[in-house]
Length: 178
Image 1 (tube, rainbow, N blue to C red):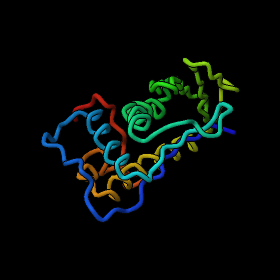
Image 2: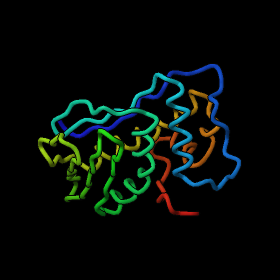
Image 3: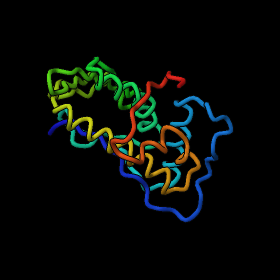
């Protein structure tokens, strides 16, 4: 079993979600992600999936775990594209794992370190870089599609509005202002 990450968006909803469009257009990315995950969690039937390192389904939720992952998402994509080592900290209680992504030629080696009694087996997995990038691009598009499905005003806010078109966007670092 190799590393996998995905988001199954909630089904289309008739009524708008309760999360409003941000009043400040330059609201911080992390805040937007938290609000977006809240809207997706309120819809109730979306799910965040991650597997690998000996475990076929990690116990994750949309409101907290997906938010933690997506807060770090732009840095992950930028790092992978630049062939830099990048860490994702899944810090929520009970998960408490750090994933380190390291480019190795045309592949990405992923190391999983646990801060709980759970032990990854194996500690390292490798995926072709193109396969991992496709997986992450699909995740971003599904995240944005989910926001549109629940009629969240955040679906029209950058970067989420850009993510709906797979492959037609370049991720920015979370701390970029332009």
